[in-house]
Image (cartoon, rainbow, N blue to C red; front, side, top):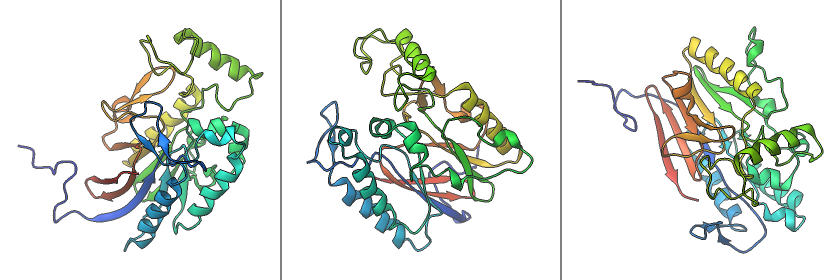
Amino acid sequence: MDDKPSPGTVNESSELLFSFGVIADIQYANLEDGYNYQGNRRRYYRHSLLHLQGAIEHWNKERILPCCVLQLGDIIDGYNAQYKASEKSLELVMNVFQMLKVPVHHTWGNHEFYNFSRDYLTNSKLNTKYLEDQIVHHPGTVTSGNYYAYHFVPFPKFRFILLDAYDLSVLGVDQSSPKYQQCLKMLREHNPNLELNSPQGLSEPQFVQFNGGFSQEQLNWLNEVLTFSDTNQEKVVIAIFPFTQRPPIVCAWPGITETPSQSYGLMSVWCVSLPVTLTMVATLRILLVCTTSI
């Protein structure tokens, strides 16, 4: 009988190594609260700042501070673009993040691209690539393309990887550019609907306009980083947008991708992409996830 501790359990021999926070889908806008597209989930537009403040206050009061916080995208809502309030709303949210006592790592979701171009985001405070780790003598682990992805080490033998799930996308790209035309062609080949945000009748429902995908260049880079981590027996946490929990698959172009633990044979890989506030605690054997809804 296997006497290993099951995931989600802590025993007396477990040793706390470090913790980190996760928050996603803040989607701030200076609007009254509303509902999501399906009309079945509350959206806290204006009040989302209060939820963010509450999360930050919680992290700052921890006896042992988390090593960092992962912000997993959709930091402001697409409504801001309609009211020409994108920059002001982003500034408000970033000012709240300044209260945080630890570094924050940002990923980009579709709402970032509803508000800003990729060039704008690259030169904004939402680009935290300056926090990346440099692996000496392994040039393949350094990003070389226009995608926004990087990795860092919050604790010895643990590597975090942030991916760009809109590397291939029609969002945030100049419509006259070859990349836009390439992505639009790919989208229309898989989605014949007049409304490209509609998955109606699609055998591959991930091919909608609000989704994106990974270029082969980014996947090659990811392979290099995971190979390095595997060789050096590192545990890996991947921050990614978008992601479904059941089954654990990445819903991105060009196809539904298995989780990296399946694709690369790594034994210790966790994917982080949840519409909740999380505090994650890494121990010698397990990763504990405690969730509180936002």
